[in-house]
Length: 325
Image (tube, rainbow, N blue to C red; front, side, top):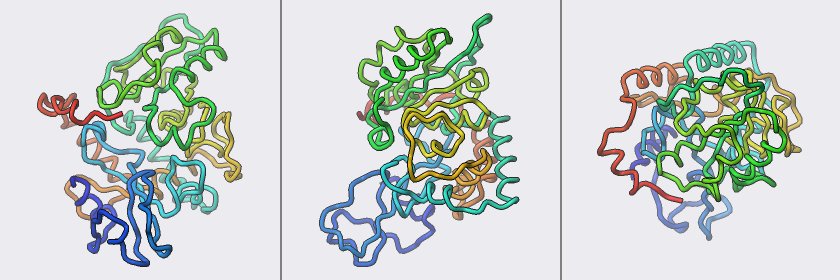
């Protein structure tokens, strides 16, 4: 129910109807589904499925805590985290002729995101300091193992512990740090299989680290499909992908699992232009019309300054009710 006004705003349509069964969907309509939800049986072949999902610069706070988003994506082909089939972002990155204006805007936006430590959720956290005397520092980013991004984008490595073990064996001399997913740390999602054994395979666990402050201090990041890999690329950090996230396959990452459809080599600013300027829809707080990525980031920075460092007690008390696998 809480998403209904947002659907109308992000889609900029007044004729949106909310239905509960396939028979209520008219012929030739667009059926909006969240994420990778399966279309209902019995849809007319003339119905086009359009998928909605959070954007890559989302909010000050977790979506699982019901914090209102600043961006969504609206995808008419698939969805960016499902590498099995094409999606609008992949097609955009594969085919768009990026202009000089695109690249200038992307470069300036990227510099601002890095300088301000902007991430997807912009959570407050503890500062981390690189231990003196260590050699290479490698970060492994944890994920929610039940998320569709792992189901449809990961390959042979599909659990956080398996990723940690692989990196530990590949990097025996590195200072290995592991950051669990913030939804798991907050108790809003279940920890991964045997994730409580993570400390055996890394040098440090960093559940409360501030990602924007942490990333510039590491030399390499390993992910399955986590957006942390994209945020690391923005900062010029080497990224190894063990799955098939949207930013893999363009010549910017080390990929253990390629995506054969992605044949183009992109610059970092071309990737940023596609993923942050042209794919999402942004909506500043209180606005009725979409805004640019730059305006959304400006609004987010104001929110970050005015928002408390943690949710009020009554909101935190709701977390057990919001928690799901």
